Amino acid sequence: MEKKNNNKTSGMKLAVLATVLVLGIIAVIVVVMNQQETPALETAQIDISSQPTLGESDAPVTVVEFGDFKCPSCKAWGETVYPQLVEDYVNTGEVKFAYINVFFHGNESILGSLAAESVFEHSPEAYWEFHKALYEAQPVVDHDAAWITPEKVLEVASAFPAIDQTQLQEDMKQVAQQEELEADEALVEEAGVTQTPTIVINGQQLEDPFDYDAIKALIEQELAGEE
Image (cartoon, rainbow, N blue to C red):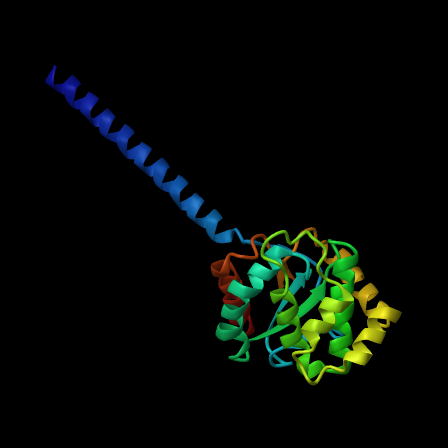
């Protein structure tokens, strides 16, 4: 009986060890798979040669925002994530930031983009401040109501002496930057953008544009690859 019990005990110990070993292997596999997962999707490399950019021209990492001036999420991104990105990476020379217009909200999106393109063409030094101010003018309540009008655009622009309001008014009236808008629309289609904001880092599209930890991780990954 004693021998039989010993065999039984040995068998139980082996079973426990086997179970522990299997669980350990599963845990390792899970960890490896999680490490291989990326919060980004591969997309086309984006030509930003004609887009407004912020930062050093030779920065090793390029971050592109596809945004819409009518989009409340874009406004929120610009107020929360964007300042962190600029402080942590753009000001250090590691990241170049670019903006591409999206027209998901129709005519108002087009008008806001047209105005921004006009400022970028004629007063590039005022572009980013105008860009920020136009987003700030977006109403907090009932943002779907019509608010991007020529009058509102000129009101926003009036805060910047560098902007020629006569030129801006004429450009909006004549749709002078139509070619630039068409180029943006082509980039939106090429990158497969379906929501705003969409953030692309060196050709990799973030699943969650508000996940700053994921943004930092991908930037650091790209910087490490440059070493």
